[in-house]
Amino acid sequence: MTARIVSILVPLYNEEEFIVPILERVFAAPLPEGLDREVIVVDDGSTDGSAEAAEEALARWPGQVRLLRHGGNRGKGAAIRTALEAARGEFCLIQDADLEYDPRDYVKLLKPLLEGKADAVYGSRFLVAGERRVLYFWHSLANRILTTVCNLASDLNLTDVWTCYKACRTSLLKSIPLRSDRFGIEPELTIKLAKRQVRIYETPISYHGRTYEEGKKIGAGDAIAALWVILRYWLSSDIYKGAGPAVLEAFTNAPRFNRWMADTIRPFLGEEVLEIGAGIGNLSRHLAPRRRLYIATDIDPEHLARLSTRLQHRPNLEIRRVDLARAEDFQALAGRVDTVVCLNVVEHVEDDLGALRNLFTALRPGGRAVVLVPHDQRIYGTLDEALGHFRRYSHRELSGKMEQAGFRVERLLEFNRVSRPGWWVAGRLLKRRTISPAALWLFDRLVWLWRRIDRLLPWGATSLIAVGRKPGRDFAESAHRRAEFAA
Image 1 (spheres, rainbow, N blue to C red):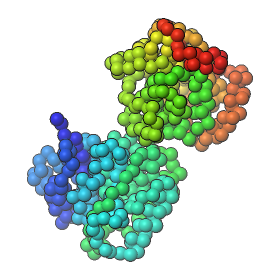
Image 2 (cartoon, rainbow, N blue to C red; image 1 turned 30 degrees about the vertical axis):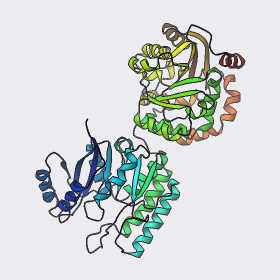
Image 3 (cartoon, rainbow, N blue to C red; image 1 turned 180 degrees about the vertical axis):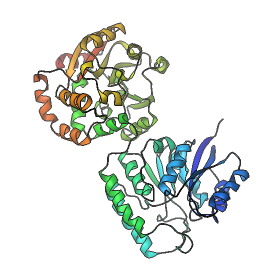
Image 4 (cartoon, rainbow, N blue to C red; image 1 turned 90 degrees about the horizontal axis):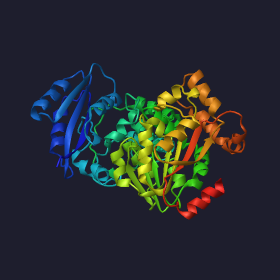
């Protein structure tokens, strides 16, 4: 069986004396059973013999150590980004190149990740356990103050934001845009992890701090800069790479709009529901209650992890990786549910007819598919391109393809007329590629009004909703009555 790998990221700057001894400790440290290690050292423009000393490690541990170099000193954050880009492991663990932190703590750091309880683990120097060298009072006080300020911004209760020892799932780290070059990487990462609502654990570690005479590098200037970093990322929504996930995150802060969409399709749902493309659960959290079974699916591992966190309290929930474009992903789901919900997904699949046939496969005879897609190719623009839309649909095209897939189309609803002018202006006129969080926030606050006037507006809708039934025995009577009542 292939071992799982942890990538140990070592930012290196002017640690000629310590780099080889710390690597010796890294390789001597025990790891949890079934886990192997790779070490990535990034020399950040050292002016002493650090790079040459690190070269020795390549010969001592062939194939296990990689050395990357910056042409000049860019800072710890920049070095971590470079190492992260090269990481191949399932998990990443940051290891400073000095001897302040003890690699024998790796087991404690990695255990919650391996057990699936945590997405990130912080090694705290201030939890009561292990041993630590007693040093500067004012340095410790500044650390606690800055940790408190960072906790205020992130709504966490960490005891040590500035710890070197942070372990995390690699795919999660790689999905977060990290901007800080220096020690601001610590609060930036913490705030962005908190905004992603991941599961963060702390574990006590040993700490053998250095004095400034011995080479400690963080100083008062870094503490002042950290306050700016905390303010900047507290106010920022820059927590995803790519437009698609960023839009999903923006809609997390639009609960009224999500509720409007959920209320629109809820009357057509049965007791056992499969949601395709659940994303981070913006609709799932409204639709899953009172179902006998709710299967939330996506293809993005980070979305699936976020679903597990947001909906972990629901006993009726099953989370699976399902690709709408892959017929084989539906083999285990064939005939399993009485309702399929597919919102804003079909337009992302080039073979949309094949995708609809896959939805058909998952339904029992008499079951329903509720499919929401963007409406009207005439307003297709840069927003659609950024979101990965192949097309927008007309009434005729959507109903025609549903019927080709085998469905009997019962209803074709227009949804959300009010946003159509704004979509056209942003995507066609202004050539925008992202949705403004501020504009979405304002739009969401007025949903009470939009719900009342939407059907009265004289132009077409932004979205279409098709409700199609799979021919066969009648759908569950309770679901049928709800749909008839809504009609």
